[in-house]
Image (cartoon, rainbow, N blue to C red; front, side):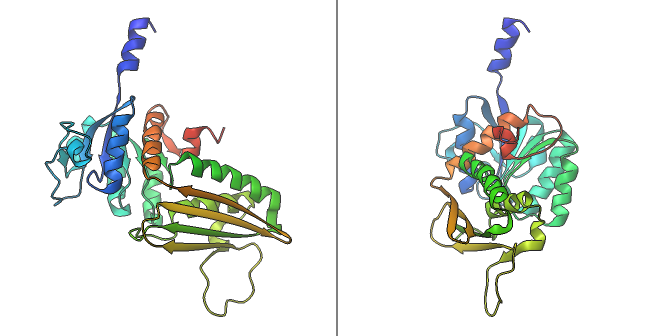
Length: 280
């Protein structure tokens, strides 16, 4: 490649579409897209009936006019998008995956709470396009998953594992996607199927703790961005691995980083550890 071609490639930016442009996370994603020199906001999508349809996405995000009008139909703008970032709700994301798969548009998905049927739609879409799907896009959380793998392998079944997560009062699903990721990291490292060993909270006469089980507990209140602690409780010692998020922009910036990475990948499903090179 000659110098002129290299310069042209460097100057080209990735056209990013954002789902839920008027929500809290959507507004931060718009800001993060504009802050990243490799990306440009090319489309902003809201739900049908939203009062924000027709508004300028930059003004809604309070970062100044971008001349990108918020629309309520992904199909209408799909040809303007290289990568779609979707942190919405499972039913909406399911439809968006199908649209992107049909239009050969890569995706970064942060939606949590998929049911089994929606997981199958994700699998089918990832056979046509490149998708990064993660319950958390922060560097710290994904580093924590690596540490959890190490700790679980070191302790084996000698330690009881309990996971405690806390989020703001507006979060509608529990446990969090990150708590599931952490539980799966422990279960996989110990050769377990999480569905067989997970225990969600405790109440009443539960009997003694079953060996090998993984306890998962959710706290909701105030404006907690996201706290997660995994306890390895062995006889005579306790090891805790904790991550505390202090700003949601961390997740938005991570998602945009994933968008710059996924556009270069082959068809398939990836996670944030792939983006960070932690699976190498």
